[in-house]
Length: 356
Figure 1 (tube, rainbow, N blue to C red):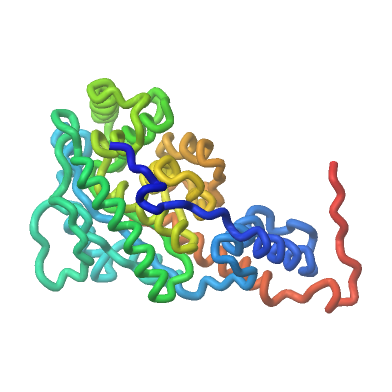
Figure 2 (cartoon, rainbow, N blue to C red):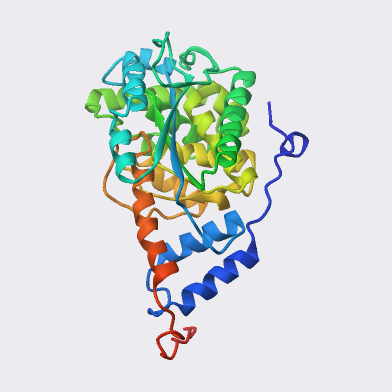
């Protein structure tokens, strides 16, 4: 079940060091204190390395929202049933969803993708059909997906990244919509991190105490049932993952393959990012962290990826809403990068860097 990246051609190149060095030199020339914009300067430098160009431009951007249902909702781990997934996905596609409104403000396009919604969607829904299956199995009783379904969902994300790159998009944000996906996300993360799942499990969309305990029990028993603590990532995804997670993991891999930065959203997106890095080592260097959700699993995932969230606002909305917030922040930083006068232009002496 292990995906062999060399055989499938998914070799991840290192980011462009020259472009990053050119970017650092540009930052140091801008008339401001050295590293005055902190981690934002690091992120712009990271994007320069990803794209291979220190002239960083992010004028065309998109949020890709992977929509899928999860059979595990049958175990009572959510407040709502899975019919909500299709309703919210259609609202997103019609420009009426939370992410739709926020993306409009951030001048970003939104692409709602049916990668695994249960049930039929009406004609003219506006949702991009890339359905691998109509939801997943209830992993409390059977593996969530077949290995073939996992591979198909990963390839869907990879292909979308390539298509969007060809259309001229310069940065992507990941989003998801799928009732029950904090359960799948936590199960996948716990297995990949080799950590106790109870400490990583949160309330999701607002479970009460009893619901949270039930959710913890479902995840814990599944990890034991499938013996996942030392399993390879393909088996983990197959047994307890979701089609939305696999699709986003593919988008992250595609970002690395096609040299386009991809912003991580909250805990589910972060789990997909971790799965992508395990499947295609090196692709995390093409990821842009955005926010840290209030689900406890995300801090552990980011620590493993060596990433730090920029926004810490106790959010838990999903859909890519945290990731899209990065776009206007990056716009402001780039305004300084491109437009602010340099020390030379101001006839000022540049700051000097001193090591401690």
